[in-house]
Image (cartoon, rainbow, N blue to C red; front, side, top):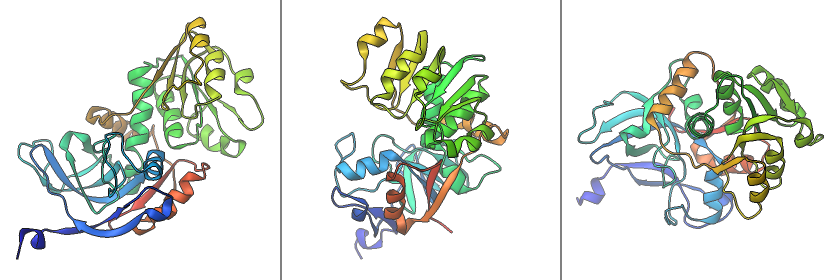
Length: 322
């Protein structure tokens, strides 16, 4: 037998071309092996994010990787093996993390490898499905509000799309930092957001938030487009707008400068220490993730179809291992 014939295999969701959800197919492929500094994780659950269906549709990752590839950056699972030099984990440890973002992470699979420090211990008190829903969205919220904007007690923080994957976690992180939290969301989601700690809510379908809100210190925007102009208007001089969408030619740069508003685009990064901080909030009961629906791995296409409708509350997750 050749080495290729004896190599362990696994199931993974792969795509061989750009396109709609129908390009996602369950295949059998070679199981990865950890190299120095990496761990091999048996995936129990994988989160689904907008970056996944955007990558699927355009057919390439930011680093130029093109099909065939496996999507996914949110992982919760159990360490199966460790590479040379790894000291922070051992086989049997339960972990969650965001491997390799924005490069291919390969989370829609039964096994994944990545640098050990792209993971942290899975928080106690939640299962793998809930843990898999956290990494990318919670790290985005944390790095935007804590690392980039430096949210402090007493500040007024406006979170757009507050019931979304990033938004509902950002509401809780801002509240845990002592902020007064304002969110935009449809009226049907207001009760949930109040239960998560939102102080004020604006129904973006019936009210112009730029007229309803003022004197804001920090805006976290996951919407973009026309939302940018209104966000600049509601910020105090010296305030910060953090966009998780690139600031393109439609961004009102001159107005922001005239208003003395800082505006930045932020791309999330793997961050072991922030994952540990997020895990501590979960264990303290100050952060909970909302999972709208769980699909089996083989139904990744259906998960994308649901997500692309843009009406999801919280996160969508793929269940991988029993």
